[in-house]
Amino acid sequence: MKDHVHLAHRALAAGLTLAALASGARAQTPAPPDPNVIWACYVPTSGTVYRIKTADTKEICSSPKHVMFSFNQTGPAGPQGPAGAQGPAGATGATGPQGPEGPAGAGASAFFKALTAAVSTPGPAVLSLNLPAGAYVLMARVRVFSKTFNDAEASLNCSIGVPGQLASTETDVNRVLQDGTTSFVVVGAYTAGSPFTAFLNCASGENTAAVSAGTNLIAIKLGSLVLQ
Image (cartoon, rainbow, N blue to C red; front, side, top):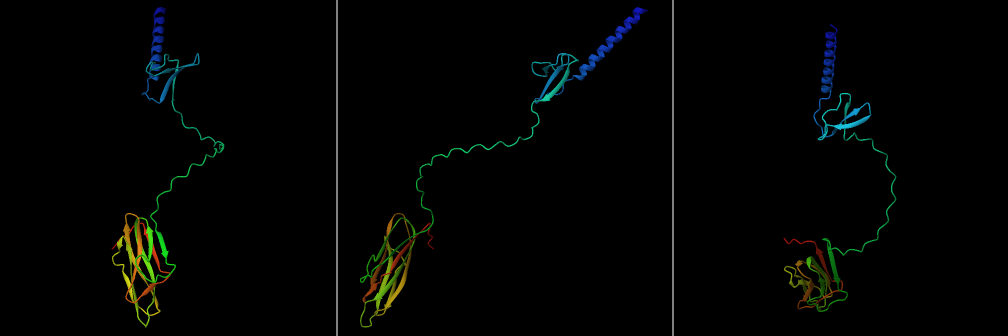
């Protein structure tokens, strides 16, 4: 009878042991792998820790008495630290050489020339301007006085010349009374692909007229010129 009781006790103990092992095995069922999570086991009796769930380690702890735990490889961001002190200013570098002059802008430039003495016998090139290539509006203000006698009327015609005469620039005055003065304006436009000279050309009629001091020639260089 005692042997039967002893055997029953041993069977019960074995059953309890198997149940505990099964419970421990269920408790250590591996979770789905996460590359950002590190799994390890803690050994309470020695205080040591060892890795699991890697390519060359076990999937579960070696003993149900070991405590399985995990932690992330990257923890949460900590609070921002205080700003550091400002560093000293760096040394000032040497000034580099001056660069080359840039091209002229697209703004307007003006060229001006005036007579300082009267021209008694007007002809070609009463005034002239040497100009660089570009687009221009050319203007001349001509001042005239008569050199006639016996109440005769004088006349004068003028035009602007470039390499050739500009079309539609010839302007004249036919009635300048004896000892009288008058003035008129000559205007033209021209585009040149190379440097050129612009002229104020004048010619007197049968009765002589002269070009007075103060007659002038103006050339205004433009960024572009549209002839309509």
